[in-house]
Each structure stands twice: as structure tokens, then as C-alpha cells.
Length: 410
Image (cartoon, rainbow, N blue to C red; front, side, top):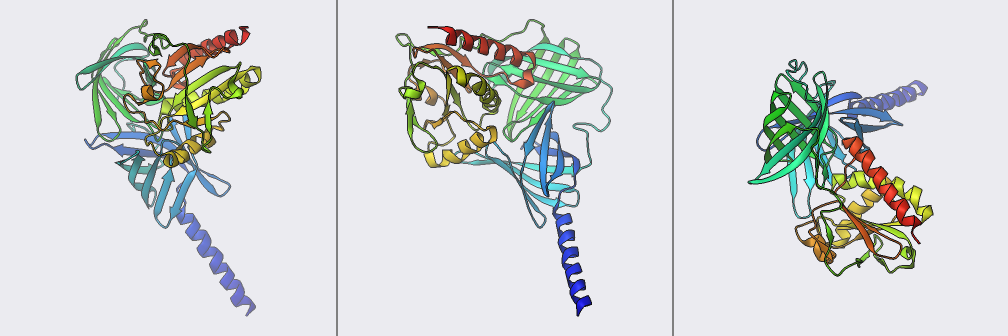
């Protein structure tokens, strides 16, 4: 009887361990591939690690490692919920491969892209890329064309051998960490973080000319782009794009926080303080970078007399539906300043309806700097995140100097 019990226990442990082992993704490097509706493939790499019996994923984009912890497995099904941007993967495991869909949830619809991934593949675009014909390190003036309209941006690239990293800066932010390859006279860049799903391709004519560029965003968007090398390329002053209408010196609002309590600038908490009003959305990757910065900025400057208020513009006007996405953002970055749900969407015209004293609103994020008297002193459009290198450093230094100057005022 004793031996039967021991055998029974052994079988239970063996089956449990075998099942557990089968249900886990293979640890190590993987190569994922999203496919757009036009059939173009957007690759990226990610690591799978085991931490205290649970699996974690870190997505590679240049220097960034975007961590994902919400991974559930049932049989051969794998469900990965992205920590931001309200998107998820629904996949089927086939040995050391995955196949299924990446689904991005919008306010009133979903968008899906086919997805596959294979373990053990550490290359992004090509296992053995063709030797690059040119080196495109440096600053570029790039023009993107969408439905006949043109947008001038600044490209910043760093090429080491065939490996290429960099980003594009626009008036409303940047394309974050891009990573890819120069193979022969071809350029390939991609990024994926659950919000962005971008693929850039182009022909390199020489060290100073890029042409025939294509920019694929999400499931179906396609723009054209070209670029010329220009060490002096720059964007318009980010403090000049959005401003107060004539006759206004202040802004005014009253919106509920995550608990439903109304908050306004008239609250005693904000009187006599330098106040930063952050216009953001949980769907906005540049807002994520700005939030990451502001959380640490707040730790430094709150004791000196600075307050921050986040005004959220979600994809739905439904308060109850907005709370979970904002809570996810709050928890991800350990935000300790108030986040308010405006009830307005990021759609054209909505931000100015919420704050009718604003003129020429460009996009998210937008940051309003208010002095100790309650007057608006600056309005900054966009955010150049850490993927932009020195632009990010220059912004943070300038922003903190402005804060110090405002705090020093009587």
C-alpha cells in the first residue's frame, strides 16, 4: 500500500511538472512578426524570462526594453495583455512558435493584425544582411506625405555596421525607439510597444539622400517619405504652436478624478503653486514618455511648491470605461498627482471644447505651465522622449530651469 501511495504521488508530481513545462514559453530571445493588411511584415525581438515561477516578456526597441508581465496560458493558448494602450495578443502555441492576433481596442471598435513568433531567433530583419552601401548616421530633414498633405520632420539616425537605430521628431512628439538595418542601399526600421506598430522602409541614394520611403502604421495606414541630410534641420519652437486666445491669461476647468470627485484649479491645493497641466491620453505613447519624466520631476519639485494635474482625453466619453485605462497608466508609473477624466475624446476639436480659451491646439501631449499667480506662462506642444537622445536632455534641462525661475518669483 505504501509503495502504491508513493507511486501515485510520483505520478501526480510528474504529470504536474510535465504539464507546467509544456505550458511555458521557451526562455530566451524570440522574433515576432506583425503583418499588415497589405502583407508587409513588421518584425521585432523580445526576451522571455522566468521570474519566481512566472513568465515575463521584454520587447526590444533600440535601447528600450518594454516590460510585459500579464501573460496567461491555458492549454496551448497564450494570452498576453499589454500594460498600456489597451491592446492584447491572443495566440496559439505550436512547439517553440506562436501564432494568432494582436488586437488593439479603440473606444468603439477593435483593430487586429496577424502575428507569429519563433523562439531562438535574434535577428530583426535579416539573419545575414547585405553589407551596407552607405552610412546614414546624422540628422535629416524628412518630409512625410499623407493624403496629399506634407509634414516636415527631423530624422536622427545612428548606424554601426548594418545596425540602425534612431527616431523621427515631429511637432507633437517623436516615433520613440526605432531599430533596424541598412542592407545594401535599403533602409529598414521598426518599433512595437503595444501602442506603436511602425515600419519604415526606403532607398538610400547616397550618404545625403533617402527616397522612395514608405511608412506603415498599424494594420493599414501607409504614407510616403523622403529625406535629405541636414545638420541644421529643426522643428518649430514647441512653445509657440498652441497659445491662449486674446483676452485670456488663465485657464479654467472642473473634471472628476478617478474616484469621481471634481477637481479644479480653485482647489486650495493649487493656490500659490506653480502648476503643470498635462493634457494626455492612456492611448498616447509620447504621453507615456512624458508621464515617466513627470513622475520623477514631481518627486523633485513637489516639495518646492509644484503641483501637476493630468487631464485625460480617452477614446470614449464613458467615465466608467475610462477609469480602468487611466488606472492602468497610474499603476504602471506610480503616478501620485491627480488624473482627471475630462469626458472629451482626442478627436479633432474636442480638446479645445474642453478648454475653450486655447487656440490652435496641435496634439498630444500638450503641457500648460501656470505661475504662482494662476497665469499661464507657457504652453508646450509634444514631447521629445528618451529615444531622441540630446533633444530629451535639452528639453528636461530647459523645463526645469523654467520651473526654477517661476518658483523664484514673488
